[in-house]
Image (cartoon, rainbow, N blue to C red):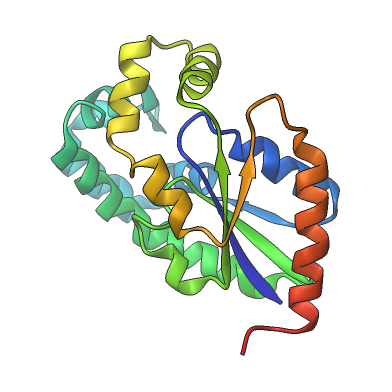
Amino acid sequence: MLRIGLTGGIGSGKSTVARIFEVLGIPVFYADIETRRIMNEDENLKESLIKHFGAETYKDDQLNRSYIASVVFNDKEKLELLNSLTHPATMQYGQDWMLKQTTPYAIHEAALIFEANVNKRLDYVIGVRAPLKLRIKRTMDRDKVTEEEVLKRMNGQMDEDKKMKLCDFVLINDEKELLTPQVVQLHQELLKLNASPRQ
């Protein structure tokens, strides 16, 4: 079974791509969703987050996402600290999840595949690319945030051109080129690659 990464900058539409893969019968591990679950359920991690970010990190025993976002997106060091605390647990869970899959390939969807060195545990990485203006608009509409807040988040991520160059495959999600046919074609290619693995 092939282990495939799926990544892209904020607002690129990687979740949309992931859902198309799911329709094709491919299981997807959503790193962000799992990270939030682990942050709510792992008592050691909760203690550590409260110690570093304060009691406001949790509200009614649930992660206070808006508070954490307001802290880390304005401070690169705090963002790196948050990632260093949460990534090991998420990566371990992702590895365990991958071992349980029985399909020709499975997907690990995450914004920070290269930043967190997750790519070292994967066979191939798919990148999802979209124009900057469209990414900003999508994120503003989805998260009900200002353009300034979106740009702050983007500044905390790897440069889009650099990220796409590191990917083995790139899908274009610009609302001009149809996305589903691109995913279906790549699905066929990955099935073939699974039948004749990399040497």
